[in-house]
Amino acid sequence: MNALAWLIPAALFLGLLGLAAFLWSLRSGQFDDLEGAAWRAIDDEDEPG
Image (cartoon, rainbow, N blue to C red; front, side):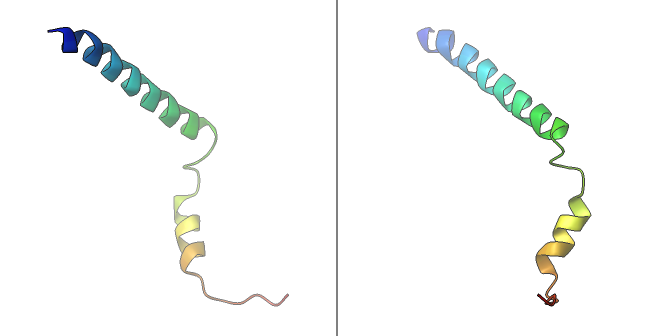
């Protein structure tokens, strides 16, 4: 029973931390252009420098 006394608050804290990180990533634009990043990763054209 003592283990539950600290496991439940720890789980809630980690869940809220994950939610905060997800919301931060949404607000900072991490998921704005999913298709463009995928195509840039496989694009093999050499641009003249």
